[in-house]
Each structure stands twice: as C-alpha cells, then as structure tokens.
Image: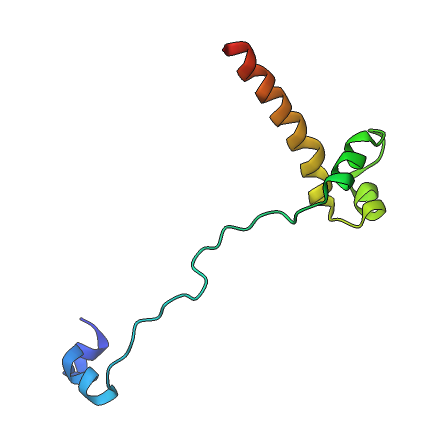
Length: 90
C-alpha cells in the first residue's frame, strides 16, 4: 500500500489538487559521446613517433588527452590488422 492510498488519496484527487503535471522529458537523451576529433596531421605525427614515448608524453607534446593518444596508437593497430584479416578471408 502506498502512502497516498494510506491517506485516502487517488491519482485523480492529487491531479485535481496539484493540477496537470507534464511528465519529465530528458533534454539530452543518451547522447553518444565521441572522442574529440584530433586533426589528421597530429594523428599521423603520433603514429610516426618513436614507440618509447609514453601516452602522457605524447599528449603533452601535441596538446591532446592521454586517452586520445592511446586510442590513436592502439585503435589504428587493431583496425589495420582487422582490415588485413578481412582481406585474407575474401
């Protein structure tokens, strides 16, 4: 039993007292976030850098986040290996 029922109130009586209540609508429903777009010249420069640089060093050098530097290095490797695997299967 809800509190309203214990008090003897129904939804209809509450709506008469309070007035019509519009349901809450989220102004930004589950917007898919995307990584900040890093310019192509910076992406290419990061891929050409020596592998001894840490992601934090690359981020500081190019003014991007460390996670963006990680994504550029690692997602490129994975996507290029996946595309070569796809070509072998065809």
